[in-house]
Image 1 (tube, rainbow, N blue to C red):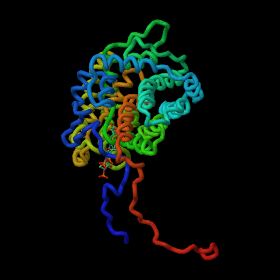
Image 2 (spheres, protein in one colour):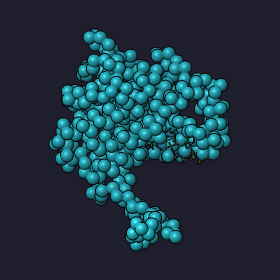
Image 3 (cartoon, rainbow, N blue to C red):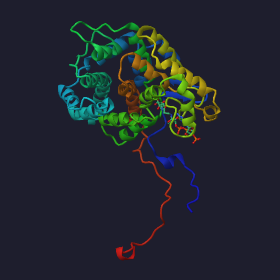
Image 4 (cartoon, rainbow, N blue to C red):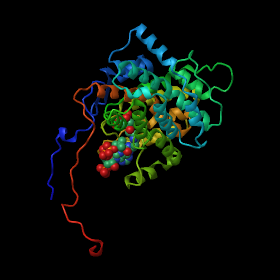
Length: 389
Ligand code: SDX
């Protein structure tokens, strides 16, 4: 009988949980990056400006923002051999597998990135990763579709260039629809960081071993890929597609109550009232559908949300829509294939992963992540010869 051992935080010795980047209040549904409410940033900022804030702690001046945007555009191209690596995948490979592989492989293209305590080298890798992840994502998409890649266009915004690399179909310069470009930029803002979530914890754990940022970020993306985490936006659309119509919702709800599956896009480790990002994404969906046409799955999603929010099973378990419940409907309406949705999460979360990684490295008290355990196995015993087993 091991008795109940109380968990002393020092005992766990996991990656540091002291952070000044993002503040969450799960009961009040509050999310702030460096003190700024997510609602204000979603309305007034851009992804690159918010990225600067998350990484540097302050909103940039006009000249700081201009220099930052110029730096990011400088590294939009990826090494042609990374493109060849992407080309080596089957046409039906999952884009998250391609993303994780390409980011991890980039470590070998930048051996200098192992010098993680050299500020100039570290900052260059941060800029490279934020710049290159949309290109890796878009090149993966074009490979899956059997289309030639579209190279970056530095006349466009961060979101606009991504849409161009994804959807440009002629030699003519791609003109992104301003509503879709803005919607994607807002989604990037909403997904940029989220405190000590599973993938960020992975980034911190790998970073605490002083590995380079490319392999650490590949590990974080691998954690995000899970359907309980960033893979949920893909799982939501698959769930809504399977339900098919509002008349099938009661049977689906019953199956969830019987434990036959989860209501994907609902529930959260921290938010136990509502996810403030979910409210903004839902509003964004209506704006996008004005341009793309209404996603027929929206009616299923709205009715499923309405029924679940009135059902004791979900209320008693504090299950509410999270950021993933409506985001996939927007990506689908934009013409993105379902498996691609977690990649749309990984692109902006690259900012948060890197900011949290830098914070960890700058923390003088940070040790290597080494959680301890409560041993509940066999007491000591002697080896038994095989004839006696
Ligand atoms: C993200 O951490 C972050 O910040 C993550 C994230 C970020 O930005 O990084 O916000 C992004 O990952 C959002 C979450 C996306 N995942 C999903 O939508 C998948 C569906 N959700 C669940 O798998 C679940 O809600 C989690 C994983 C999100 C949270 O799981 P918890 O905290 O383990 O849930 P819980 O222990 O609080 O659950 C309490 C009860 C349990 O039932 P009982 O055993 O008490 O009977 O609620 C049930 C759970 O089984 N439950 C669900 C459910 N989520 C929890 N039942 C049905 N459907 C669900 N979605």
